[in-house]
Each structure stands twice: as C-alpha cells, then as structure tokens.
Length: 290
Image (cartoon, rainbow, N blue to C red; front, top):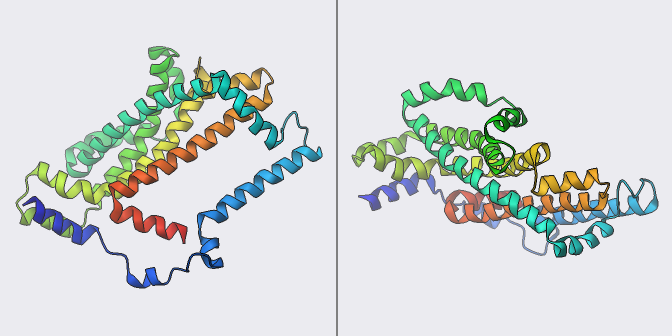
C-alpha cells in the first residue's frame, strides 16, 4: 500500500522539469550563463570589498572607524590563534542549535496539528497572533527574571524567534494540500497517522523548508542580539566587548565572522534541502541561478 501511495503522491508533487526549459539554458562559458550564475554575485561582492578598501586607504573615512579590508583579514589569524574568536563562535552556535532544533520540532508538530485539526487551530490561533508581533528583544527582560543571563536565556530567545516562521509555514503548507492528495488518502483508506506520514508531510515539505530556512537566519540574529543585551560570552558579546574597548579591528573581525558563518549555514541548509526534497529544491535552485 505504501508503494502505491508514494507513487500517487509523486504524480502530484514531483512534477518533472519541462524539456524546453532545459534546452533553453545558455551553454556554460557563454556570457548569458555567466550573468545568470552565482559568479556575478561573487564578483560584485569582491568589487564592494575593493571599494571599501579604496575608501579606507584614501582617507575619505577615518581608518580608525573603517579599517581597510586587508587589515581586518590580517587580524583573523591572530584572533583564531588566541582561541577567543573560535570559542565565542562555538558557544553561540551550540546554544543556537539547541534553540533552533527545539523550535523546529515544536513548530512542525503544531503546524501540522493546526492544519489538520480545527480544534487545535481554534485553541492556539489567538495566542499565536497575540505573541507573534511582539519584537524578540521585548521578551528578554521578562526571560531574565525567570532564567537569568546564562545559556538558558539565549536558548529560549532563539526558540521563540525561530518558532513562528516554522509553525506558520508548516500550517500554510498543510492547509494548501491539493484535493487530489486528500482523495488519495481516502482511496487507499489510510489512517490519520498514515495520512500525515505519507501524504501531508511530503506535500507540505517545501513550505516547511521555507520556514526552516527563514528561521535559521533569525536564530543567528536573535542569538547575537541576546548576547549583546545580556551576555557573558558568545560571538555577540565578543563584538560588543571589542567595540567598548575601542578594538575596532577586532569588532569588524567578529562581524565578518558572523557574515561568513551565516552564508555557510545557508549554503549547508540548501544542500540538505536538495537531498531531502529534490523534486522541489532542484527546480527552485536552477531557476534562481538562471
């Protein structure tokens, strides 16, 4: 039965890529392929860094406020050798992983239940709509009263920040389930749990991954903000301490590190997405690169 269900699901979800779109792609090495590829963005980023370098070296901006890019890059090796940069980053990523993982589990579970059970939606929707617009930093003073300023505070802040995009995206994906897939569950006489596992989750997976990807960036942001507001360690605390001690170059080192880590997390997430839902991620990434 499961094989038949998966086959029916594949016909509705895994739509093949049109042959015409594949043949219309410009060949590698052509100018059209280049301007639609990631290399255009790489060159633009390098141009911005070169502009930064030129402005800093020329004296248009005080180098004490805007150090040259080469000076910042040269400081990375000593910062890594001292261990404080890597230690701070590891501390932040560890707490972020716990909060993000918990938010993913709770958000996906509640999103599915709200999408499939009207009573759950009626129970939770007013509370979620009351809490969702509240800025994340507004929760920090309240959480400090209960959790202090150590790791539990940061984990809780990451959990709250990452929860809502995951939950709402999952709910939207479940509610958008095509009628043909609902009919498939009835035709094969699937139980409620089998319907969730074989029909709902695969069909809603693209929407779930949108929420997971959005929340990944939010988790990093709120982790750093929490460390700056009530921190005793972590990469956010590292950047703030460098600024307060007028170690401007070290401050930029921390910011550059956050930028690289954020890019790496997004790159890794997209790689996981391509493996987990190839019928959706493959076409999306191809269209984005064209």
